[in-house]
Image (cartoon, rainbow, N blue to C red; front, side, top):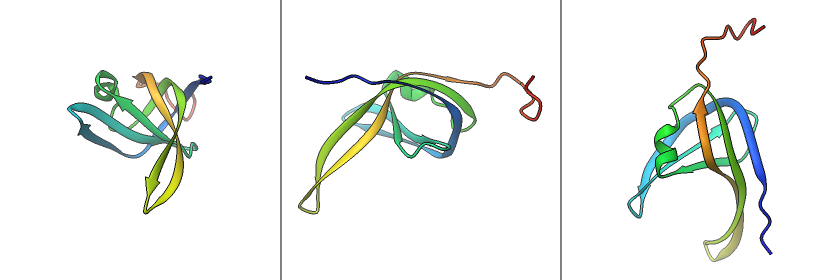
Length: 96
């Protein structure tokens, strides 16, 4: 039985967003400050990921197994189901 984990993340994009096309499908991969997991947004969601700034995203955890240099490895990612930039013009030094 597969387990589905629901994840909500609010934070700043950390570093550059890596954009690519794999099997004719758009992909945006990035990290959020303070979270050590790679975040993957596919297809239409890839276009919604801004290049920088604060975002809120929802998704699920996906653990996969793959071969690297003859050894089996495991990776856990966050797969995005919804992403939105949080560019509200709020003063981050005094948000209240």
